[in-house]
Length: 217
Image (cartoon, rainbow, N blue to C red; front, top):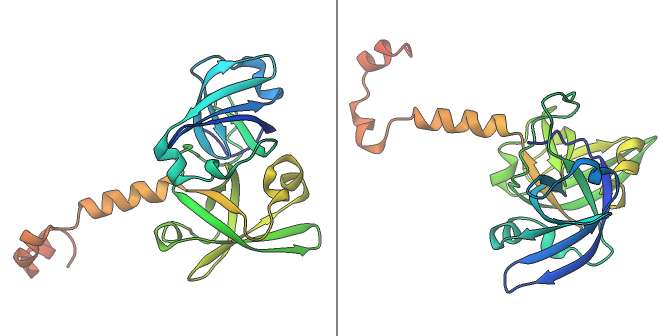
């Protein structure tokens, strides 16, 4: 579990590609203080497991499912990534609950300056947009942000100078791909509601008496 408050920008130093997977070596310093083999690290919002450690790097294996659902396969040597260690229960919850399980990939469709802020417009499929809520939370490449605009095909977030400087989002340009994780609370609510919808076999059994008995009429 993570908060979406990025601790450090790391650098990709090695990528060993399999037919559908990669082994990735990431150079970093700050987050290495208390990392051990087997720990979870958020890399561009993706929960990866540290399998090897060095003085200033860690190595993680990326399975085919992760390659298919995220932008990791588009990284290059010397590319920059957002890094965050797993949340400790004693930490302040500065962002929102981020699981590190990416819902999909969006495309940056616009980048516009607005005084000290920069607006990013992110185009995303309906499967993601249905969870995007005005003034709600979303994690972009692992960074916790607030949704400030939504339409039928995209949403917008505003980046303050600190966010641009401390994460890779300030380096994003139009056409770049970005990992999206929607707020997990919305997905749980949807699941609970769907489980309460009568199945096709029972739809014809709904009557006024049934609705009154269950508090709907």
